[in-house]
Amino acid sequence: MISKVFRIRRRSSLPFYCSPVLLFIFVWLVMLGSLRFEISDVSYPNFSLPVLIFAASLLSFLLGYYLVRIICWKQVNSRASACYQIDITRLRRFNLLLACAALPLIVYNYATSGLPPFFALFGLSTKLIYEYGRLKQLSGPILIALFVDAFLDPSIKRRISYSLFAFSSMLLYVARGAILIMLFQALIVLSIRTSMSKKRIYLIAFSSVAVSAVFFGVLGSYRTSDALLFAGMQIKTEFQQWPIIYVWIISYISSALSNLCWFVDMAHFDHVTWTFSYTLLPAFVVPINPHAAIMNSGNIVDGTSTYLANYFLDFSYLGIFMMNLLLGIISGIGSLANRIGRNFLFWSVFLSCMGFIFFWDFFATLNMVILFCLQALAQRYFIRYLPSRASKQLEEGTQG
Image (cartoon, rainbow, N blue to C red; front, side, top):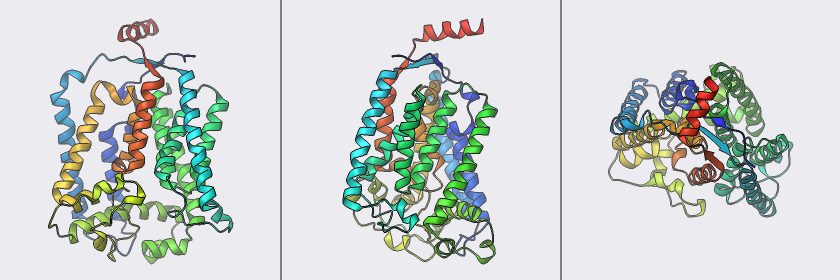
């Protein structure tokens, strides 16, 4: 069973969050804007340092991006296939396999750890979120892939059943960050595949962001009381009167950049370490972090420090340069021959990681590596591209 023919959108018709360059700049501007509030007693006070880090990051990112564009300029306007079809039979087989792989892991966690953390919202006894269950580095990417791929199925019943199963399973773990990444990936795939106008896509995107912010703000208030949030994030008194949703968003975004700035200010580099690779290891074999002392200092809150902290602590300023250069190179590769549009499942993972660089380095985590592999496999397994000649004839027929 094969789907109808879908046309790949041109890069110019995609929203800004489907462009790595624009998304990178946007996220950095949001980080700088949130830090400007100085919402916490330990917010980094010297605004020139984060601006300097942003300037260095942007220049090294653009260097990598345009380096690829210059070297591979012949592929920039490549006549790659503009149309594709979905093998529905293979899609359903793949989604069923994902569901069958996720269900035993959920049952196993319930059998070994009891009720999931979600039930703590109702006063029931559960383990803490970070202590509950095992193999979450495997179940998480499986559920995210299932949620995103479910919306490719033309059957409404299958869309609802698979996506609801994946979303509710993630919600049981109260995995707010993973759920936000999952929703963002689904939005990216929708934006790339849909024939709707860009204005309507933005309307859906902004509505989704607003609903998600309210939902997870309420969920966060149940999970962590306002008093604990104020104390843990060391929120200044004048901001404690603000609506909690604003405090939650600003503090979570700004604290990570503030932590990075404190690292740059206080850390003294003396030798190379490799802590950035620890997140690629299974949780039960992660060694002791040699930077634990500075990470637990009084100015550091919430434990997150953007996508750059580990690289700076491991390699000093060279780490900041190399990480951004690498992201620029990868983004440049994605821009060639509209690879982001043509391989939308794989690149939606990359863009979602880019969208959360304000929080953590999701590019180099084991669960995201697994998700990259799953979606790359899915793209090759059930997406069929039409030959370039057939795509051209279809375009001419449509214009005629």
